[in-house]
Length: 325
Length: 107
Image: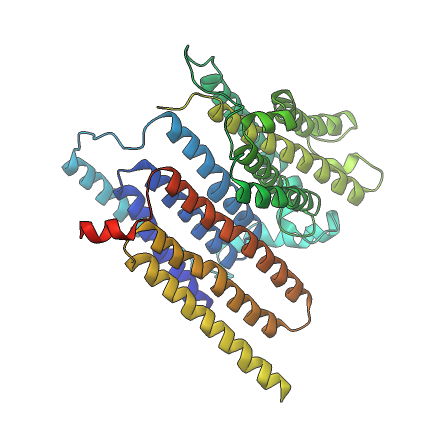
């Protein structure tokens, strides 16, 4: 039964992807991208990857769409007609597609227990997580501790992306700009405002739950940061840019981004100072299991801070630009 | 005995909910203008939500899943009509007037 559902979702995914390529209206393309992310999240969930599904739904379907729309407000809605070299394109795509299809013949069957990916490191992770960390969510254990370097890299990528966007968009708007942060928002639309206000506390609460319960249930810093950021973006859409910046000022956002990345790196350095390797949490406390848990909670907090701050900074950087008339 | 009745009732609700989703989908594709399409789509997100989730609650019985399903239903019933309202409002603001007479003239 589940395989039928998965096939149905994958077919829809292909149709959506083709539609994204076909359309020349960028607004339609953004909406289709959002649908694509939602379908992808359902697919991840079918494959029992709840952590990834949560991230994909929050970031892919939620925040990315808002940021894309903000970008469209600054540019134009229609794709520029470009000179097409159809023959060359077709040849290149045919060759690449047949290579990829040829490569899938060597792929092990879906869910095959003898596949290399299930034989190489995964059994070790599954075996050692209860012993080293003593909590059930192996994904968090791998993300936070076993492969902590990769996650550190991801946090620095988020950090760099935030700085990059701020460098490009953070310059002063041109003279005669009509943007007024006090006039944005849906202040005169009562129903969305009332319902939105009702939802925002629950969204933030859920974000905090995902952050601090990440060792026991799907979730962690990335998901929590995205959820809290989406709550504040909702607030900005309802009450206007200025109100959101009053609630969470720019300095706080930058502090979150920098603080999050520094917290993560700092935990690693503290581990060195206490006589271990970089990001070897066992040396933090006397009890190695408790030390692992402390280390993971600390670095997850760093991840959450960095992601939340970066997403909100990027959103505000787009929203503060004057709109295309 | 009582279990059979609950089971039949829940399947009846689930199937009716499915039919409502189908009608909503067909309506969204087939109806002539934006507002009627929105009407069809909002049928899916209110009536079908209630029917399907109540059917699932009857299947789940008195467990933790029931509370989760009730919470999901509360959130969906709050947010989905709001989204429909916001869509219709945005359409009205951007000058798409809901005038059936005008449609007749054009066709």
